[in-house]
Structure formats: structure tokens, C-alpha cells
Length: 155
Image (cartoon, rainbow, N blue to C red; front, side, top):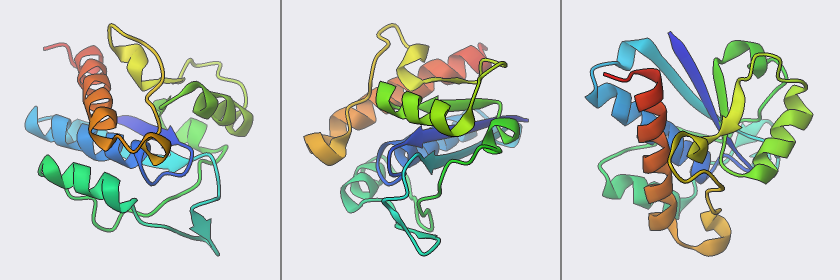
């Protein structure tokens, strides 16, 4: 089983969008039983008394536009032990990457990277919390997830 963890700042916009996008892509490819896909935050801002906030409503609406439900998803915090629980730990931007490395420590197995590194146009996925452009974020996430799936299962 290939275990993937998507990571962003609060785990209420980009990383859950990537989680549910990737789950859908592997399901449509008939590979759902070969993958475990989750998401997490580098910050506790969206986690109160141990309970994470749900997916941000505009992100939830963007997922719904594409037929995807994220019901029940709540923000969770990235933890040092996640390095050993997942095969790939994928951030959305360089700030996430810095925070991931701070939390996870060294990356001797080369598990940590950025989602758009799996495309022809590497870079950051803009945070729609600030841009308000959830559609553009979705497009970038979809490109990244397609590229990631192609790398992991090139059929």
C-alpha cells in the first residue's frame, strides 16, 4: 500500500482538497485498495482543544462542484511520527515545506516534497484563504495529483 499525506498550513483548504482529489483519482483508476491518502496541518490554528475545524466552506463548495464530499474531515496536526507512517509527505508551498521539515526533522528517505513538483510547472499552490481563488487552487491541485498518480502508477 502507498501511503500519502498532503500537508498545508491549517488543513482546512489545500491539503484536504488534495486528499479528496487524490482519493477520487485512485478510485477512478481502480487503485483505491492500493492507496491510503490523508492530510494534515503544520499549524494548530484550526485545532481547538484537540478538535480540528472542518474543511473551510469555500473549499468544501469547490470540492462539491467536482462531485466530491469531504464530510467528516477535520483538521489534524502533522506529527514527527508521521514520517514513518507515510511513504510520501507532500506540501502545497515552500512555507509548508519549511514547517514540515521543522516538525518531521531530516528526510533521509526523500519522502518530503511539493505537489506541483509532479508537474511540468513546479512551484507553490497559492493559498485560497488569502487569494479567494478556490477554482485556481483546485486546478493546480488536480494537475499535481494527476502528475503524482502518473509517477506512482504509469499505466
